[in-house]
Image 1 (tube, rainbow, N blue to C red):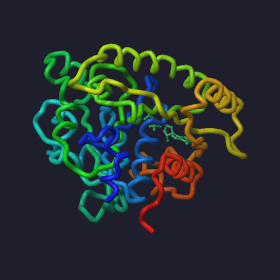
Image 2: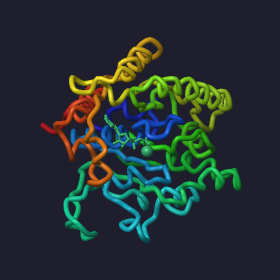
Image 3: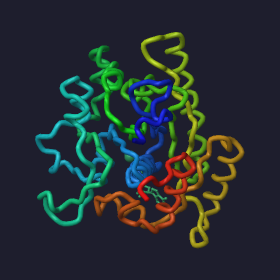
Length: 297
Ligand SMILES: Nc1ncnc2c1ncn2[C@@H]1O[C@H](COP(=O)(O)OP(=O)(O)O)[C@@H](O)[C@H]1O
Ligand SMILES: [Mg+2]
């Protein structure tokens, strides 16, 4: 079984690799990358969980759950308040194939679950500020984890508040913070602030034994890069800037596709909706680069 591969349990710990899609930059492609990489890995035989921690509920929607589908269901907020376990909240990932909300309006994505978000996740930082014990919500879920997932894909809002901090402190050097940014020089420049924030988290947790406290930017994704039909000068300059400053962590590029917007309308992740589009091909390349070779054939 893949799950027992030691690379998915850094330092012999009981919980999976954590990939945190984080950058304080709206519309930067965090959700597209988190869901595309998770689905690509799942289809190749690597079980995982996408945690939707953004109150905009984007990854919940792409993985088959809008607000109507989530009526009466537990969400990430119940995890934060300690009202539910991971297995009670995580739902089988799926995508829309028909209208309505019957089970046959959706098809299952094997090997993948989603922790859905809720609009109330907008108050997550306040909830932690009101009760410092809530800072441990994610630590407690990790310490009690016993499953065989390979990666937890954490989809964040565009902020460095208390909720992202409560997750970041559980990352070790083998995990990764993955800024997924658009090929635009202004987005590349935002990475400096992320590095400062990670340094702050590491400083705050130095010497602490109860949490790893070492979130590290090991991988960076540049999306919407030029193609023969999409030749933006800004995109080319962004790629040059990223290569000059971050060559050692830069993953293979994810090219531009105007169709990428359709994920939200169609409630279906990119690798399933448009498997032959340039970005889908590129996300497969990225996952191969990261060692997630196809195990299904
Ligand atoms: N490779 C790509 N080419 C073109 N547009 C993209 C690409 N990846 C993402 N997008 C678009 O960028 C917008 C923002 O992406 P999203 O993943 O929702 O960002 P974030 O989660 O950072 O807010 C969406 O409309 C999405 O369709
Ligand atoms: Mg998002």
